[in-house]
Image (cartoon, rainbow, N blue to C red; front, side, top):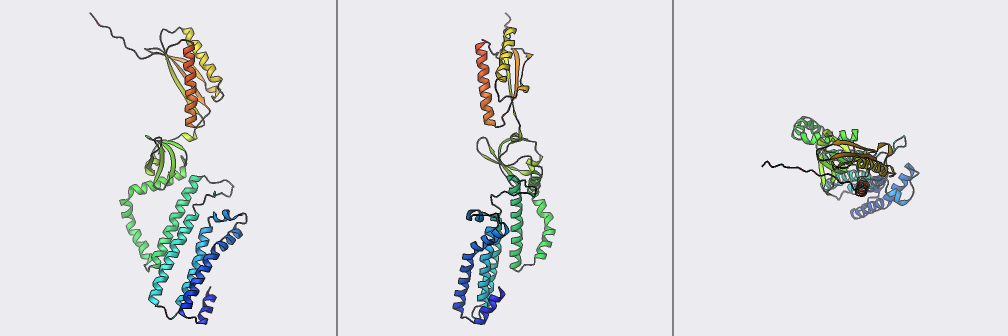
Length: 350
């Protein structure tokens, strides 16, 4: 790069020609940036093939941006060596270009982290989407923090003084933003413990729904009424969480209160028929079926029906439960057995 600039200096080209040459250099580097980026990616990762796959690679955008700005840097040096350009104006333009370069490179690296390609460990196991997203967010923050410090340095401020100032003011900032700090720590705790992931159906206190996003400060949950609930991670990290998506099976439970005047033979027949109904259903786990006459209540005899269904999807579980309920009601109808209702008899003294 220095050799190119030295050759241009020796040629002593007029300012107009220098500007045109500078523009030509920028256009040239802009045109070759996609090609060079693809070549570099192919060298680094030989398995990556096809134009679409190369463009989706996380290094494609950063490399393309860096190559373009190398052209801009060379173009600035071409104009800088001219005696006909105001040095102060050129200095301002150079600073602006450098700041833009820092910000755009940071943006390019940040966008490169949004790739949908899975991250694999050395063991060959692929990280889940929640972990990938958390790592991507962490790296994005680090990238932009570095970019901000570089921009501050370009503007001429002393970074050492700023860092020292942050050390003194850090306590005040932390005290002023305790809730935010707690939520950030809560986000880290959720990432480490991983009680749930994106897509899981959870219940946290009185809140219930599907996890849509896990951020540093809050977790987004899509509730049953289709609204999005933003719960601070400080609350999520200290609450009892029921993760329904981790269920291996679901429990069917029904309590049938039969009229007191129903013959005992009818109750036994009812129990046997309900057992037979459940055992004939393949989706019900056979060794979990329990149909028993458990309580003699004030208003009737209570039969408890318990069985575990080999289905974790909530909507499908409701469909199976509804089907079983209809079939039990059909058995009651066939056996002419009536369900009891809460009644109260009042005696009036004359």
